Length: 306
Image (cartoon, rainbow, N blue to C red; front, side, top):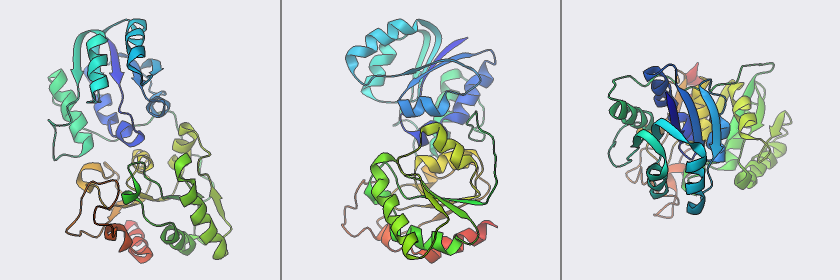
């Protein structure tokens, strides 16, 4: 069966779709899959053993017609995106059966379950969502490594403070070498952590902010012994490799976007009346959901992972 799959745009959503994608393969073990999607999504998923082709989608509508013709005919088209642009792509694609995710249909479930329910409904199957799966990486650990990830693409409301990340890292610096992760637009946060580590005479760190490709980021995270992060794409990558993780949650719904099936994970949050607001910036202007989380809250959660 020739299957065309449009992947979610963001890294975290893409990783959370992997149990559903594995169940598509379970539906037809002879599947030949073409992935289309954002550059980030394709880079994360291109090593899947059932993939015969990958295409990075241009966001411009005028290019979708040309892409749809170049792709050819399929037995099945699955889109994990609910945007208007994806609806237009679904109309253009030549496939015997077409299905598109509807974010308004699957509510109050973990995002992994939402995607998996969508596939079960589309294919008339009833398969459980198993562990997250990213292909093409193997562990090669030498020293004990701690990853620090202060960024979150959703917005500033999801971000804990660099000085507090640095406090935690400094406390653990005798046990781990430290790697600081951050995207190109988050380099200032990583640099602030680095400055605080220097002030504390911590020298065993690497600042990789903005300097890793998606495969390099995944490879680095797969080799960590401990990860401290906000609600972010890299958090879900860590879950795929069962990396012990402390995830710091503020305005978002941990019941829907926390790590999936990671046996060693802890969530740090304050459970304020205003949580979860699901806003990119704090609507009350105080950011207490993050401001009230202290370094000791995270350090205490790490102890509970043992």
